[in-house]
Image 1 (cartoon, rainbow, N blue to C red):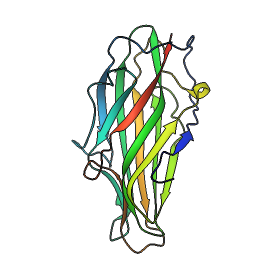
Image 2: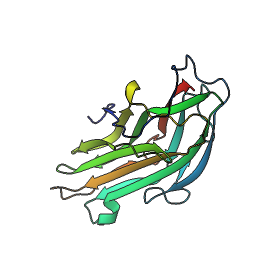
Image 3: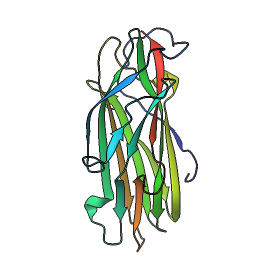
Image 4: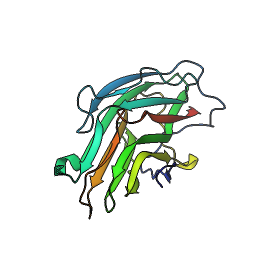
Length: 208
């Protein structure tokens, strides 16, 4: 539903590496990120960046987009109706711990004409494992304002990075706009021009 969080369970097909009991706390040592690549039609060079530091409590990290917009109607081309951005990041994890992505919070701005619709969807996977199923959030017009969507993974379905291995995390986000029966221009964006749109990725930690 627009204007409020939309929660969907992530359907995970990859197998998790063996881990022991859940950690009673997150690692005390500061976690760092190493961004390997950022590319896609929705994030041309220089328009997306992952924060150099995770949250001070090691529970999350953020990605900030500045020109991630899908458009439809009003003369927009078919190519403008579908945009994607893939980020490849290495999370440096302290010895004895491993992590999964437990929840992701998306926020952006949209103008959707009556009869039009828009989609935000994403999936996540570690290099060398099968991609997770895409979690899709659909928004319908008429609407004008900030949209929010949240992907949440049930504890039993969390896919953890293999213990003791450096595996890059791949994040693939996509925006789509469809003019449908509308006559005007519609768009959906994760763009700082209209709203604060940092995407927050929350960790789940376990001991190896």
